[in-house]
Length: 209
Ligand SMILES: O=P(O)(O)OC[C@H]1O[C@H](OP(=O)(O)OP(=O)(O)O)[C@H](O)[C@@H]1O
Ligand SMILES: O=c1cc[nH]c(=O)[nH]1
Ligand SMILES: [Mg+2]
Image (tube, rainbow, N blue to C red):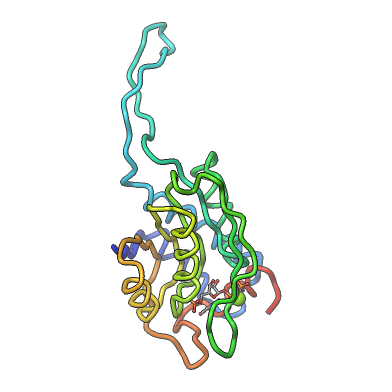
């Protein structure tokens, strides 16, 4: 597994704004989507292209580049992953969306799965998992397990903030998955929240705090 911390100035600036206590849901949601967009740009940097011939404006055939290889399915993890989805889809509008629903039990911190609707041809696609927070890693491991059970072989994940503990857990369980995150923070607190982190991203995106 490769872990990519994306240090682009726009990403770092926007993430810094998101860390401010008291930020409104409107602004938090807008920034989550914008950083999701920028992370998608970085994560798709290595996509293969091929040369194809098209009719150019001057009436002669010209060679242009097209993305080649496996198509993408974007996998937002409910609820909080929906906050990044618009920004991701903005750059890859033809990607199919596979929704998975998991929440973390607040006492045990174990993921509880409650929904999934994954595209039928997931085995032929690259899965791009989208979730603002990678904390203990339990939710991400369960999502990767589910996608692999359905035959998916190429999996990447986009996160706003990841904790070292979660990265280690995912690396150990799924060494083949690529992680793109705007930040690797210090640690988890006793309740499993990332420090300094963003707080409860789902509550902030949906205004349920
Ligand atoms: O790495 P983990 O320790 O598993 O924690 C990360 C998960 O916790 C949050 O979701 P939450 O359970 O709060 O659900 P929500 O999106 O519905 O708020 C977050 O969006 C991740 O999905
Ligand atoms: O810090 C954290 C950890 C899990 N889920 C969140 O929303 N925030
Ligand atoms: Mg939540």
